[in-house]
Image (cartoon, rainbow, N blue to C red):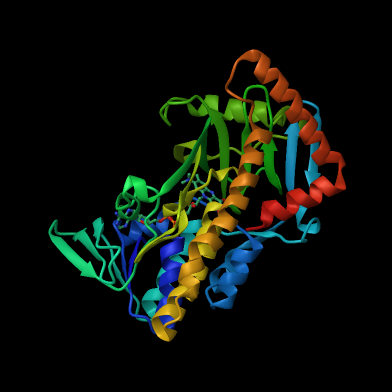
Length: 388
Ligand code: RFL
């Protein structure tokens, strides 16, 4: 079994297959240090924690992660909190930076004797409709190599070799560009509030999410196509404080901005996820905008479903799980996409003409008011916000 990519999807899959006695190798384009320090997600859903627990992969997150169950909405009309951990299914997130999770998964895989080739880029996947698919790679010394296996798992993200291997006619590509960009910031400063902060402002969205006691992620809706460095630090803090109504609700803890990236809010889904002996999981299967913090959680869920299906097939000759793999995952993916789309419409005005904007903005105000006042709406929000 060849697994492309050592992100959450590839590493959960690798751990689960390896401990089931399935011979597998992970091929990762980047170096180990890069993989272990790439800061991205931070909010793990309750079901993700259950999956990791089930397989003994959650020790680090129980030790260092923190339970989280509150978000705060700020608008021109005031602010309110939702203690979502006590609503809906009464589930909380665990805040645990993705690079910590990846480090834990890597360490456990390698300690158990798992094999990863870092600096090894998959260039192409061939013969996926046979029982001996192969992967051509570029090795760290620049040479070409080739791996052959019964199955190839494409866990190599949106721009990986697995996606590139799919012929245009063989896959439906559902894609949506939400027309909005965020400037994502990682700041060396403690969180400014003990909740996720979502600020809806006429100048655009601003968000606040804890990562660790000393590091906080902020988001600012940003001009499309502007480079990440276009705004000065003063301008960034000024916009954050204005949009988050810091004058009314308390100052933000400022600190060194250690990472800036522009995130275009885009979503896509590939259908199906199985192409003969090539199986897609995680961002390779579907990209979801970070507005609802679902991507890493879907990656872990899909990896568990795929691992079980592969073990059934390879050790018991039972291919039913693999036959159902795509349909099962797509149900989860579309539900997450639906909620993410709802969040995007809640948090941003449309880029369109004024009349359309004013109509949308009034709908948005009404939607936020429902969320503030309606218990059933709050339960629905909580269930979907933490759920995958
Ligand atoms: P990853 O993590 O991108 O890992 C793919 C791995 O494949 C390697 N690779 C290749 N290896 C070999 N050959 C090739 N040709 C290769 N091409 C690529 C890459 O180096 C990499 O190591 O995909 P995976 O495993 O599917 O995991 C997906 C998640 O990383 C992603 O969905 C989340 O980070 C999304 N996301 C969030 N998800 C959450 O659940 N909660 C959050 O709070 C959250 N916040 C975020 C996010 C994504 C963000 N960005 C990057 C847009 C915040 C941000 C800013």
